[in-house]
Length: 110
Image (cartoon, rainbow, N blue to C red; front, side, top):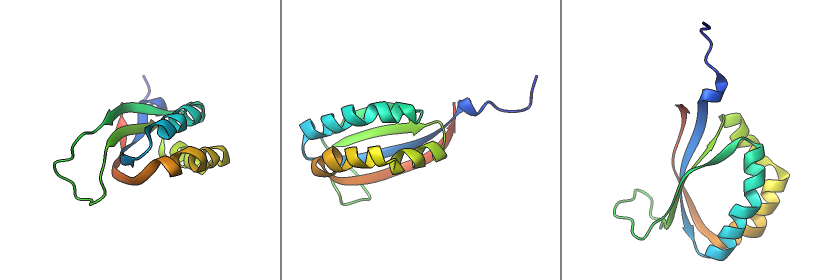
């Protein structure tokens, strides 16, 4: 038996709220970025369309809520700096999302 913890058992997770203004473009963004997300050992645990926000510390509206994860924070940072991702973001995300609210980020033992 070893005292070392397998790094695969950790995940860096971010809970994100968005105000999506164009569902079709946002769907195209998700389709375009998913293969790259998988390359960086990332994915989505939850994804919701929100009808009504009852309490919010942030004045920006939210109509989409999701949890995105990566094996670790380093992979998350590399993904969001990847030139291919930045091109996808510019093409689909920017014109389809009015605002982004980061609700929480944390490392989680799985």
